[in-house]
Amino acid sequence: MNQIKTAVLLAAMIGLFMLVGDLLGGRQGMTIAFFFALIMNFGAYWFSDKMVLAMYRAQEVDQNSYPEYYSVVSELARKDNLPMPRVYVIPTATPNAFATGRNPHHAAVAATQGILQLLNRDELAGVMAHELSHVKHRDILISTLAATIAGAIGYLAMMARWSMIFGGYGRSSDDDRGGGNLIALLVTAIVMPIAASLIQLAISRSREYLADEGGAQLSGNPMALASALEKLERGAEAIPMDAAPATAHMFIVNPLTAGGIAALFRTHPSTEDRIARLQQMAARGVGMTSHGIIN
Image 1 (cartoon, rainbow, N blue to C red):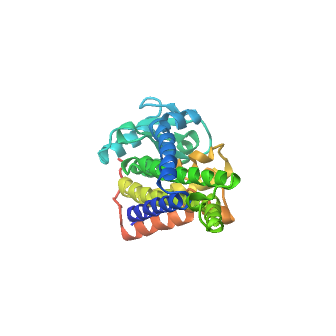
Image 2: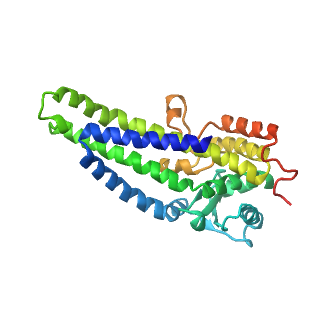
Image 3: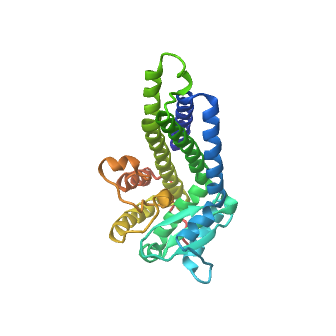
């Protein structure tokens, strides 16, 4: 269901991009905006793992330095027929984790020192299974595609603002519909980028649900992942993380807080809703094994 939802949301974003391009001036402006957004996001996609790991001063570890953490990741990757990702530790007490890398062969998982101290082995396996599910489903690629289209809409909105400043009202400025074109430009400049951001964030939330499901099935213990999410939510509130908003969507729980109308712009579903879904999976016996993956 979440795969279908993602496809529908991406289609809606593409449709929005085409509508914005048509309102602004046709194919030429649309092509230029998409080209610049594609170039910027292609670079981010190709080098995102190195950039984000460096940003959080992540240190690569091995079996000798973090034996339990490393063995959990290794066992999960082997069970899911994935290449062994690089394994990192982030030097912060805030409990959190993320996965990065453009595909399963160039993947990395990172856990904070805080999460390694807070969770037991079953809970850690649930979290790492969630992150490997992101890797398996190529969520970095999907988020990059969404960011490319959203960025292109942003460029079109910027073009619309400049058009209003210099008195150009789009492709129909030579006829008597200048007022109508001005309204179209206002909608393009103000409303469309917000709509694109909302769709992009909805895609991010749908991928989190999918990673929760995949992680619960891979670890064989939905309740361990639910327990981990509950601990991580409390831990993130108790020890705030100095996280960049641009990377917030990568973490298993949102390192940034948002309430009220700001919740519309959350990169993650509510933790309560995620836990409830995992509890429903456990009640149905979905993904359950007698001892998870833990020996």
